[in-house]
Length: 71
Image 1 (cartoon, helix red, strand yellow):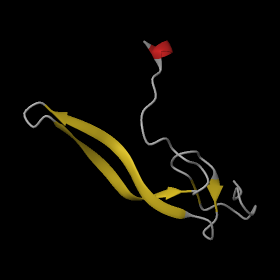
Image 2 (spheres, rainbow, N blue to C red; image 1 turned 60 degrees about the vertical axis):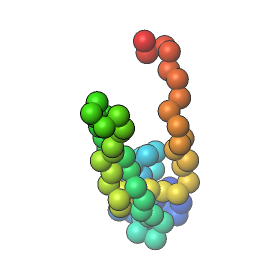
Image 3 (spheres, one colour; image 1 turned 90 degrees about the vertical axis):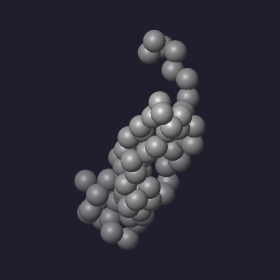
Image 4 (cartoon, one colour; image 1 turned 30 degrees about the vertical axis):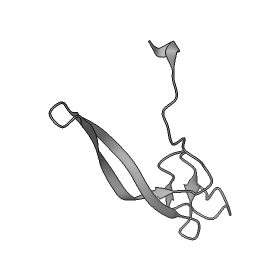
């Protein structure tokens, strides 16, 4: 796999979009693995990886979107 930005050999791929990145273009940020909802606490808690590999070019949506076709 080649880097999306410069075509050097990729060292990893973006956790969100899958683009390959070399060590010069790799960025790191949080990635939400799981959400746990507790009935007793009435709130959600998330299990997050703090240093997931990201490309910086993709923009994951901050809120979920409805997908009625999956119902």
